[in-house]
Amino acid sequence: MNRQSTFLVFLFALTCFRIAYSGWFELSLDEAYYWIWSQSLDFSYYDHPPMVAYMIALSGLLGESERFVRAPAVLCATGVTWITYILASDIFGNRRTGFLTALLLNITLIFGVGSLMTTPDAPLSLFWMLSLYFGYKIVDTQKPAYWWALGLSFGLALISKYNAALFAPAFLAFLLISRENRRWLFRPQPYLAFALSIMVFAPVIYWNYLNDWVSFRFQLSHGLNPDSQGAIINAVEFWGGQVALYGLFLFFFIIASSIGIGRLGVKLKRDDFVYLSVMSVSLLAFFFVNSFMKRMEGNWAVVAYFSAIAVTPGFIALWADRTLTAKREWVVYGYRASAVLAVLLIVYAHIQIVEPVLPMPQKYEISRRIYGWRMLAHETDKRLKPLKQGAFILANRYQISTLLTYYTSGHVESYITNGKGRFGYLGSVTRLIGEDAVYVTETGRSDLSRISGYFEKTEPAGKLRIVRQGELIREFRFFKCFNYKGGLIEI
Image (cartoon, rainbow, N blue to C red; front, side, top):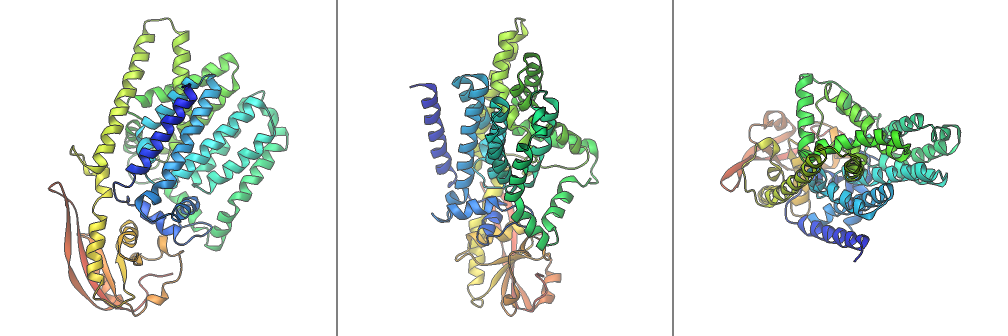
């Protein structure tokens, strides 16, 4: 069996495992939110473009279980792995390097576990990787036709997640740096490709125009506005998280390779090396600066790592071949040991998700986020049953609201109690006036005094303690609310 056949067997087996495994645990906090989008398709939504909703809607034609909600993430991960294999194989001239690069990608915690969760990062990763590959083909072949493919894939990335826009300035920076490729700036193809991407993105722009630019405003505020937490604390938290998400010690090999391949590209006059370096280093620099100004989430910088990972095994092999000092063996052994440690971390994470074996700080315990929702929905169903037929659910957080809709019998409509926000763009709720509701809130977060004025009567309806392996995960309180007067859920 040749290397490509071996890789294809590996990829098929990995995909089958992920499809099977993805049904072994409940939806995470945000996955149900995106599932709600798929039930009300539109050109865009409050906080992200629509691609993730389209993908869930498509897989939903086959079923509504967790496996079908997560199928887009699994299949996008398969596509990203395949493109990474092809890209690394082409750049370094052998399939073995491509295979090792695909393996490296899948042993990072963010990709290995993230490939099981359907979020906007799933389609973003696929179309960013496609854009990265077509950009490489432009550099490698100088064929104008690849600009059309780049324009289309970049447009699809834009309607997946807004931070795909970072591809454009990074690619422009490369064109300005590269003497050979700078000539494209004086040809029509880049501008036509950009126009094509804007055409693909146009429905999102139109939706924002109709809705007072709410999605753009939300993301600009969410992603760039400074917060009150100290700059050093922000940066340490973010980059400490990056080290964990990208394989602990492997993180440092990935960063060093992204820089080293650029320097080697300049020395060898390899523009493809320089291209992949710029597409990583420029974005890492952006996130480094922003990490001091804003508390950032760990997945925000994912686009900066794809090209860095794509060159890591190949660069380390090239560096080792060109280095004769004693540190050569130390670096190679260190890289291999780091990879083994990353594999152990991935195995541990997969076990911990379905059956927690070691205590973890609550902030980092992913198993807490994917357990207890069926139980909560079952208890909510019991309290809905004696109410009028059109009864709905209220919750104090949008994640809980959407999880309850997904897991309740008949997918009972649910809303949040803090105004318009994320649900204000999914349709009118004036029809709810006169209906009863069940209010579900985490203990300590109840806002019953505010809610009671919008109903004729409210009354306590018990509580639920969600316990796993003897540990209290969450506690919820229920309230029955009668005859909704309107005004609480403004649209």
